[in-house]
Length: 100
Image: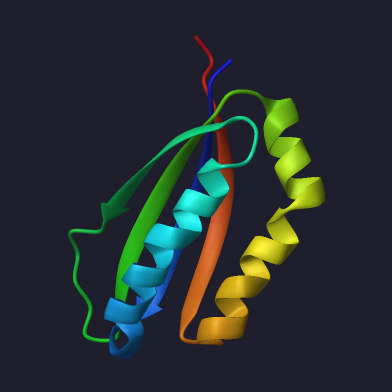
């Protein structure tokens, strides 16, 4: 079964370049975890004067692999962004499971 782990991010425009540079490395680290197969980054076509909106779709091989990430790595990976950028960004997440 195919799993998409979706992360929706809003980034303050004043840190955007630094954030995007950091995000490339962050995604590479996540792709090193078991079960994470690929990542695609999308930007929202609606623009804002205050923030830049991104969506990342991680393709994950199984629910077991994603659960392992949540149990063993997610808190640390999320904290890295908070430590570097504080409240200059926000993220929401959801899990999409293919049904066919």
